[in-house]
Amino acid sequence: MPVDVPWHGKTVHTGVYKQTVAGPRLVRRLNIDGDGQGDLSGHGGEQRAVLAYQLDSYRFWANELGRNDLAPGQFGENFTVDGLPDDEVCIGDRYRVGGALFEVTQPRVTCYRVGLRMGEPRMAALLVAHHRPGFYLRVIEEGEVEAGEEIIKVSTGPEAMTVEEIDRVLYLPGHTRDQVERALRIPALSPGWQGSMKALLDQPDGEGGGSSGSAGLNTAATAPPPGWPGFRPLTVTRVQQESRSVFSLSLAAADGSALPDALPGQFLTVKVQPEGDVPPLIRSYSLSGEPGTGTYRISVKVEPHGAASNELHAHIRVGDRLEAAAPRGTFCLADGDNPVVLMSVGVGVTPVLAMLHTLARHHSNRQVRWLHGARDGTEHPFAQECRDLIDALPNAQSTVYYSRPTDADRLGVDYTEAGRLSSEPVRRLGLPTDADAYLCGPAAFMDSLTATLVECGLDASRVHTEAFGAGAAITPGIKSTTTTAAPHQPAGPPGTGPEISFARSGLNVPWNDDAQDSLLELAEACDVPVQWSCRTGVCHTCELALISGSVDYSPDPVEPPADGNILICCSKPAGDVVLDL
Ligand SMILES: Cc1cc2nc3c(=O)[nH]c(=O)nc-3n(C[C@H](O)[C@H](O)[C@H](O)COP(=O)(O)OP(=O)(O)OC[C@H]3O[C@@H](n4cnc5c(N)ncnc54)[C@H](O)[C@@H]3O)c2cc1C
Ligand code: FES
Image (cartoon, rainbow, N blue to C red; front, side, top):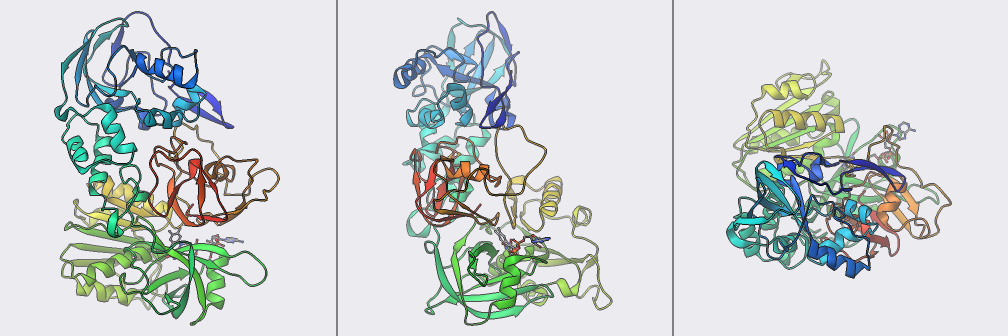
């Protein structure tokens, strides 16, 4: 059963510590009686009811790692098996053991906890690199199983794709389209792995501007490589007030050439240099203009006390230069014929406005539902621009909510309904359930409206959100603490190394080689929200955009991230870096 173990100053709740048991045990749909998983979303569920690992791999690791202390259960498995090697067992194979019938669903999911149990942090990567992951079983017929019983193969899975082969397809470079298509023809393959295989199949070709890296491991790899490395100066060609608090900057290449195309929904990261001898402020702004014009437009809300937004508003003028990194981001309008719901509040309108421009430019026949919430007419940027775009589309409908309309605001002209854009009015709209929805606004708005859209029948995977700040953390197995500290300088003496800028958190920290082994460890020391799982370069959960600079890897990632991205769990800065974190 799961236990709490101390690790890196935190507490991990994990079921990786298994002990041998004597006598029969009842194997049920979700678990063996007396067994449990600490992290149900990572390692639990029907598809991962029983984990099997081979004695032959024990012998291999004893030799490879020089260990003589490996006891059954060491790899977190439920069944330590004699035979059944990963390069023979196929996804979909069925085996009878004692009174129960099993089906192979997927290889083991790599994560740091097996390394924690082994006292070998590289273990997750080693299991993949040496092609010895082990595999999960689904329970087809519940029954009793006892150590020593014979394992009888009942049938072979369709496509005869071994555990080792499919593990390689997902985690290592060099898979073929045929392999991915074969994997997708195996009904027994778990839905999670089916999703990864579909993402690999849909990934644009790496050549000719398509994406690199593995889309099967992280959506950060689905965008094309950035249009240029690091920062370059752009010229401000127009400054336009859009509402009481939002103004736009149009930007062009300093030499007048066309800027690389951005995808609708992507953002630009800029350096804002305040007066005096102080470091620049690094901030990101979604592109709000029509993509594909060779120029960019960003739109900035002047926040009360906001350092960069006030600096820009007060000082930037036509003809000024602004250092900008190439457009990034994966919150992008997906191709298709299905309906599109574009939903925003306040300045969250910017990325979805770029999507509306794209739909209008292509005279799209898609059904488009435009939903926007503003306080009143003075805080409603792009009102006329949006009306014109919606009028130009054959199947678009707009609903605008003013939370506090003034006497000057005309119901039915400037806005559709008084009140907030919130769950209750959205439920009444009868939005198409086969739509892709794109949401941008405050975190609470996106959380509640995402839940509402899913309640209304939209597929959760088709509800996309863009946060104008740090993203949600993924820290599997870590027991949550009640207080979430705002990002801060790390404890201890400041480092003397390169400067690490966490762009979304607005934090610049000097690197300290004595204190941290990876950029991930530095982010954790600063309470910058991070996402990770294996912590050793396999799973790509920690993949993110490197806005500028370069890194060194140790260990090298099993498969490299997409161009312009890095894996922070196994990298250190090779100079100053700006991270989209
Ligand atoms: C992917 C992405 C896209 C984005 N797109 C846009 C966009 O299109 N348009 C846009 O306007 N922004 C966008 N942002 C947000 C933008 O990057 C900045 O975070 C925002 O402009 C605020 O920066 P700032 O320097 O003005 O405020 P900061 O100085 O960073 O302050 C942050 C917040 O703290 C508050 N604050 C600061 N000091 C005080 C104080 N003393 N007392 C009380 N409160 C205080 C400010 O009001 C502000 O709300 C985006 C962010 C991301 C990550
Ligand atoms: S956490 Fe798995 S690759 Fe970084």
